[in-house]
Each structure stands twice: as C-alpha cells, then as structure tokens.
Length: 196
Image (cartoon, rainbow, N blue to C red; front, side, top):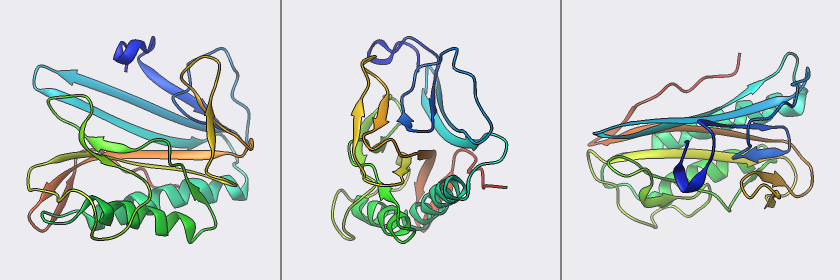
C-alpha cells in the first residue's frame, strides 16, 4: 500500500465506523471492536492485495452478521465468475446477498482488475444488474471487494484525506480476494476467512 497515491503506510487499519482506508494509529482496540485490514505486495511481475475483517474478542450480534455477510457475498461473487460472464453478474451477486440481510453496500468504492498494474479495468462495484458491464475473459485477474455496512450506504472522507467513515456512525465490514477467471469458474488467489 505504501506510496500508492502518496499513502504513507504499508497497510490500512480501519475500526468500527471507519469503513476502509484507515491510517494506523495509537488507538487501542477494545473488546467488541471490528478491525478491517488491507495489505498488498508487488514484484516485477505484478501486484497482489487482500482485505479482511476481524472481530476483536466478543463481537455484537450485529457485527457478527456484518462479517458473516461479507464472507457470504464474496462467495456469491466467486460463484458468478467465469469466462463470458459480465461484471454486473458479480455486482448483482454481492448486492443481493448483502441486502437480503438488511445491510447496505457502499457505493463510493469498487473492486477492480489487478495484475501488471495496481488498479486496472474493469471496475467492479458492489451493486449492479445481471447481464450488464464488461465481459470477463479467461486468465483475467480480479480483486473483488465486498464493502458493506449497517444503516445507510453513505460514507465520507475524514480530514486525513484517506479514511472512509460511515456518515451515520454505523459499523462496516470489508472483505476482498483476488480471483482468476477460468473457462467454467474462477480460481481463488487468496484465502477467504470464514467467520468462526
């Protein structure tokens, strides 16, 4: 993460109402918090990145549902990916899974293609309609993001210029995983950590 558009740290750490892109700080985690971590790496051959949400100690029932739904939505996205499918198929799978649990998808941020460049086409929103958008092709690498929260989908950017914070103060969750498009499905290039 460090150096991308001037980001000063190697990973992002977002707590509770901080939805994503939080800056590391001296803030002490408390029992019941939920922590979102995004990290990345690169070599001369390309880029890789992944994001997780972890409950701290005993999460509330609502936060447990956030984390579980993020995993379910990422699995639904995985099931929608295959050569010839459309970006909208992925987006629709995420949106319907999240909204079926009475939660909201964050619309200001998206997943994306990844590989030789850190971020490349196609953009993959967490909402959309089946059958629309760019067609997926075999061998394509996608970094699929599920970004959701309780309450409204609205977030605003903190004074630090990076952290997306829930406008209504509600908690959010993030899970992302890289996936390679195959002829009849997709191959996970990272671990999807299911809630325990």
